[in-house]
Amino acid sequence: MIRHAVIAVALLTVAATCAAQTKPLVGDPARGQDKTRMCEGCHGLDGYRTAYPVVYSVPRLGGQHPEYLAAALHEYRAGQRSHPSMRAIAASLSDQDIADLAAYYGASPKATASK
Image 1 (spheres, rainbow, N blue to C red):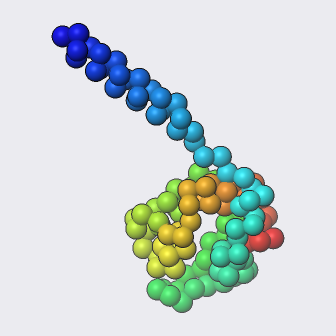
Image 2 (image 1 turned 30 degrees about the vertical axis):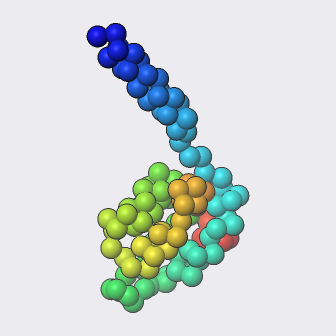
């Protein structure tokens, strides 16, 4: 009985320590701006329409909610969204890269990629 209690306390201690060490990522807009080169080819052109895989207007990124941008990039990276170019780009991003890009685009409503 005491042995089970000791094991339970040890497991709770380890779980609490792990939870305390997990900090939410905070994006840095300045670092995000340095990472926009891959975005500007499509998202930085006024009125740009992509022709692959279907024709549609490419959305502007500046002024979007950072949480939305981060969620979208995580979904592309996980394969939950289907645009092939975005999936490839998102696959190359770390969680910190995503947080930084989201912070940059969310902080500047008039920003286009790299501007």
